[in-house]
Image 1 (tube, rainbow, N blue to C red):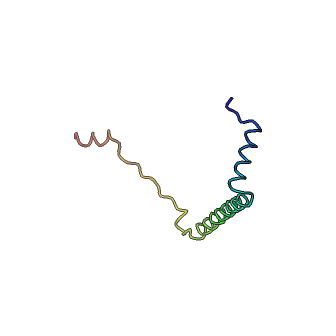
Image 2: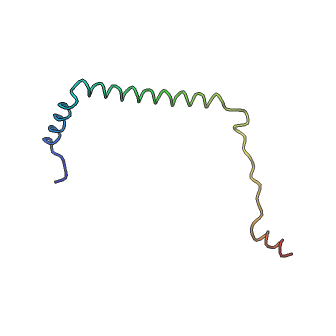
Image 3: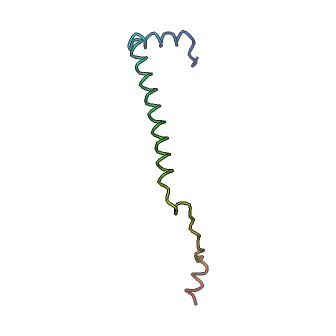
Length: 79
């Protein structure tokens, strides 16, 4: 109960082939593959443009200056 046997899969595949035909499924899988390739190419191009546009200041860090704590502020206000 709950699991699909081999016969269930055979029936599902047969129905899909009847509805879409063998050619439509092949076209669909080809379109999916082209979409994945285009996505990967776009990601590689984005990485290249991000690497080229780095300015000399991009690697610099800003030192953090400590701020006053609440206790120091209250002490100053009370004085």
